[in-house]
Image 1 (cartoon, rainbow, N blue to C red):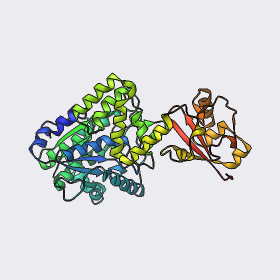
Image 2 (cartoon, helix red, strand yellow):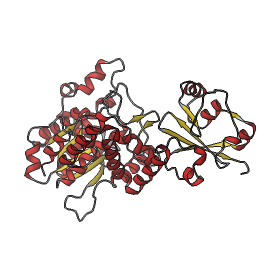
Image 3 (cartoon, helix red, strand yellow):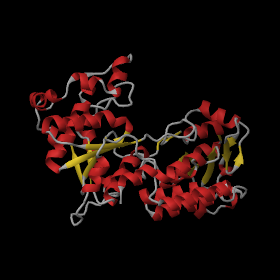
Length: 429
């Protein structure tokens, strides 16, 4: 399998160092990608680098996942307009542990595998290097002129915020990572997003100057939505890989609700379906777009990859219950149907408030359906709120015990796709 050809038709190659494809054809090559430990979970923006490592391993090469415990303390200026807050060691340790656990789900780390994946943390080698040693052994090999020429540095240097020496040194640290892995693990390839090209080529230059050897690299384009909005963001924030942060149902819904244009592009990037299969899907989708074949296939493949087939099936069942028969009154849903709505956002309501009657504005704000009473009012006035599948038009509507389904639940809906199940607590039922 020619991994570069495979990634090219999928739209996953942007920049590539000459000779990289020949190197990958010549021998089993060890390649790495770095992951920034800014949270205990990765989000779907990290799926592309994860998939690059999976493709590398499928092609017979050895993947290395580097978790940046040291560089995470510094902050990468690439794509940033201002310096981010630095994390302490305790927070970083928790984040690194969470990310390691996730990566182990997607890559084969079995020692019996000749190209078994390995995981490293750059804090393990940086913690033993003094500042003077780093200046002597690393700093003298890369000129300030070379570092200043990088776009990520120039943009910050010319902006109003500027760039600290801490962040300026980031590319030197990442370059040293590549050199260290080259000398200790025979890593000859680095991959990453296109915004990392400057940092990555600093590593290849470092290896050339310090070791007199050749190293290779390629990057993947940054994923964008066709409408220009940021990929991986919803009104609730990031779409996480951790099911505790983003439920499998919500994860599935993100992919199911992509546009036709995005689905045609993303199904190549985020699935392992082969080219003839994808071309056939795109053709069939074009004949009947209303069936949303591309979106359903994309959502199935990526949800199974991240959360497993069982969670995918649960997400489909919940979707069918909520969307398959929109005309069905909520009063006809059984208590099992309501309690079996996996992934729907859960909330509680004090029973005493329902006994007295709580205004709909306060209910929406208290349950988190709306971020504030002001937003709740706007949502109702715009026709964006339903209570037990009935549109709410009165901003002064009192919600009482009579609205409870099975004397326990209220089903709230914001827009067409966001459902909330509120449970009354502290009252006799």
